[in-house]
Length: 381
Image 1 (cartoon, rainbow, N blue to C red):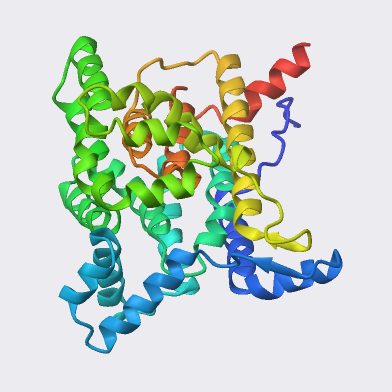
Image 2: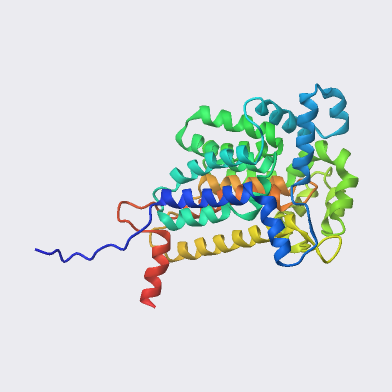
């Protein structure tokens, strides 16, 4: 006797989706130079600039100096503290495995593994959106050498997992990695934890948020403004006019905070504001800005699509989650840094996307999906 039940359409295994995206990212990362050489020949361009992040080249040089017994005290006088600490951290890791494209990909896959389990109850559409953003061209670009951003992208999901599940061994390990990579990120992570787990009222959380906005420029001024005021002005002022006024207000209580909302927006929009498709001539392609431009576009597309699907969903869970809080505090503190860079805020963009997805209640075995909400709405229309 034949069943009258309608057969469910085939839905590909989510793990296959991760494997496909991972292999594609690995292919483009390992054959990065060959890919761009072919691209230049295809469009008859003469050369490309910034094929690798200049900071990665600096870190590789410092790792070599450490291997040759370089004097830490001398290096501390030549480079910033954060640069030396991260380079020394990579040097210690290089004793275990080479800090290269391949090891960066392995590190990134560790973060992907955590994202996979975080979204296991939110459907294939959610995984697809996060993978598109996570393995965007900028991620592949940053994976070409030692990169702070790759470490943060890989560590953040494990930190949030440890906080959610009260597994403090993961919290401590993730914080130690982030402390060695980009110390600035410790402040928003500590504030996020304090806001979510110790402050119970929305009023107290709002006070903490506004306090961070107005006091973070003052806190960061002790590390940045003395040594990088001139370089920050030279780098940013011609492109982002607010930098001049912001740098001169950093050490003044409450004044620097007035610029934070606009600077946070500038960090996200920097690939569009300061986009230079070509540099040093019409036939020299700027790979860094091209990768940033595409990745920023993917970020906005993913956010808009997830928000639209969320609006159509009938199973909303309007409770601010840890991911959104981490992004909010991170955006504020990153905006307080004198330099404006999209790649500074880029590591927490997947966290924001996951936070938006989690505003929808998880699936309860009915096989529904974030994308299915849009499909059902289209059928009604």
